[in-house]
Amino acid sequence: MEPINDREAIENAINGMLNGLDPHSSYLNQRSFRDMQVSTRGEFGGLGIEVTQENGYIKVVSPIDDTPAFRAGVKPGDLITHLNGTSTQGLSLQEAVEQMRGERGTSIRITIRREGAERPIDLTITRDIIRPQVVRFRLEGNDIGYIRLTSFNEQTETNLRRAMQAIRQQAGNNLRGLVLDLRNNPGGLLDQAVQVTDDFLDQGEIVSTRARRPEDAQRWNARAGDIAQGLPMVVLINGGSASASEIVAGALQDHRRAIVMGVKSFGKGSVQTVMPIPGQGAIRLTTARYYTPSGRSIQAMGIEPDIEVLAQRETAEARRERGEAELRRALRNDSSSAQQQPRIPPPPLNLPSHIVESVQRLPPEGAPAFDPAKPETDHQLQQAVQLLRAMAAAQVQTPTRRAAR
Image (tube, rainbow, N blue to C red; front, side, top):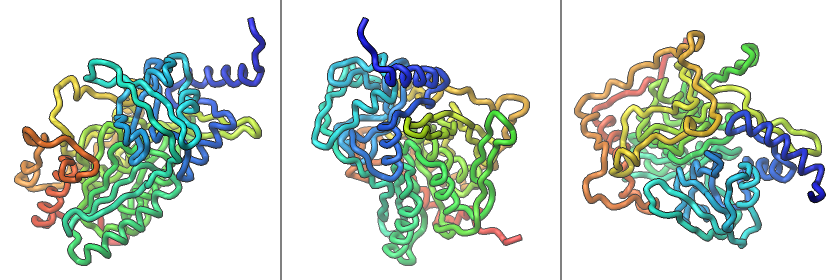
């Protein structure tokens, strides 16, 4: 009926073909590819949310800390149904992302549908330059270190080491344990996940990948050196912990280096390879699955915590599992096949029963709502801190220091 742009038509055809494969394959035009490269370096312009696609709508995996979306109250699991009053149905994921990104100071109105909310929620958010502080740290009391990783970009592992060094200087000889907070961390670069895990392991496998062809399988192993020097650790996860976060949590759990606490993670266990096309952007294609050291596939299953602790008192419906498995065309988990039977992971640390029983799975009745600015309202964190102090008092050891062979 009307003239069309040949480039747009071809790009749409390629994107449609790739979107039909799985939720994470897509075509990146030159602008999108450039934006992706900028974001992995540690800054980009926009709202500050990690998104995926579900049933034709845009689903929030996680807001990034201290960004416009985070401050506006966007939550994991929200469905973005409209952008500036126009439905997101029919938009590709990349098209929606491009609309949400923009120059600093410009605004966009998003409409979200939230589980449990009676009506859609309209939010007007002003875009900003997103420079996420990927590593945050502090002392809880004077004896427990707290490190939060918000994503895995090129700066994550370097800043993690700096954070650990600063915590040791602040605590002196009083440091008794470490909390590694991966909640609402949507993932990022595989090499950063491997390096972060390696920082806490002396030896052993970190993660492996298996592709369609057996010869393309890869495996990463830890080198000697634990920056926490064997301190007891708790890793916090939730439904917004995805991909690289699940690699770290799964490896530390399998090696029994840390107690994993919280609720089940998102379950994104697939590898995306970005293949640049000279002068034409890039293709992002799902090429393999991740496996934890014990042989578990993360895909559509997620990481189950050793100790489940809820952030708030929820109804059974509110606790319904949400994650990768619910995405349209999500890859299946192949660990149930005869050829891919996972090895059974080691049992949890032999914690005394009184320590395990002291963990409160639910916040007390009438507890204040969680406020990120007030750590005392963070029930999961408080339980992690109490568990570490109890482990230190009982001198529960983690198997990190082994004789060299």
